[in-house]
Image 1 (cartoon, helix red, strand yellow):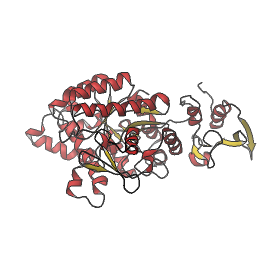
Image 2 (spheres, one colour):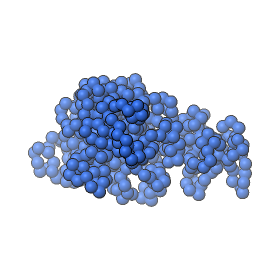
Image 3 (cartoon, helix red, strand yellow):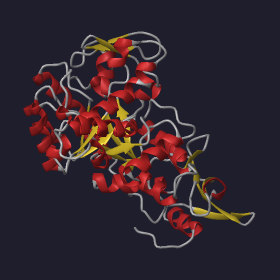
Image 4 (cartoon, one colour):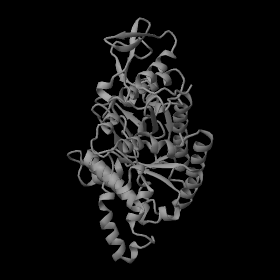
Length: 419
């Protein structure tokens, strides 16, 4: 069903009245919609303005004590229909993690999962693999898909592009074990996208320690499972992405139209070895790794060799765009920096960048450098605490135009991922 009504009230009325058992009531001149004896929807212009819709929904239309702020697109999604653009602006989040279900099942059975072992500790405990420990900052890593959907509703996110939590890439494993891990994870993510196609898209994880196996798994993930591409670390067990051995992988991804989403390790990155205090390995080390992979993809000639490659960098690419002037100066003055025919800054608009940047000033600078058509919504779910949500944050930024907000919140990713 597609709606072609004009006003916010008419749009919301058409959506709500399409649901079985719905009645409309008028109170103080304002309509509300009810089912099972309880109100489940109302127009809320106070928070979102005349052109925005918000509703109060009780999950399952009446079985939740506290209402959850959401919007009418999700009424439709819960009833098996995809959101419609006419109903309201969509929101698509490219940066949403998954801790595999098989990992928790193995922990409960006190056995290893592809070389990762659970150790009881405070909270959810830790997992050890490849000689490194991983702890969790959010209990949401154990959410069921249904709990995850409720959290998405509360944050105003229509679609999550799901990818593995990066400590579990498994690049330290041998190729065969790495492929087994990847297949388990990719099958799980594909299961989400098939059961809730209006709410989830997916990115694969790959056994990049074996390029041939990685290409095979990417092809399976894209052509058979329907995933949109792959999430990658900023290096592969120390190997950098400009290594010639990775060029066949990039060529294959380019030919498939696969999106490559780069995300560094949140706890065990190069800064952790230098200073493990103050949480700097996460707050600073992560974005430095983002900038390094941007620099390598550009200066190493990857983007020059694969002009149609689709790449997105987490955390706004870190300080990469801020440093383009220095990279350009280095390119002009050093022979070994001139592997590419144009200065590095000429390539920064070939990449996409998410909005997990930390401040409005940083996001405004990024948009001014690369253009709003290269910036996409990210949340780093469930690890970054948003108050109240990444969507509300973008919507409330005074320095962004409405057109810029629409591009960032959904238009760019809808086109990039072909949703």
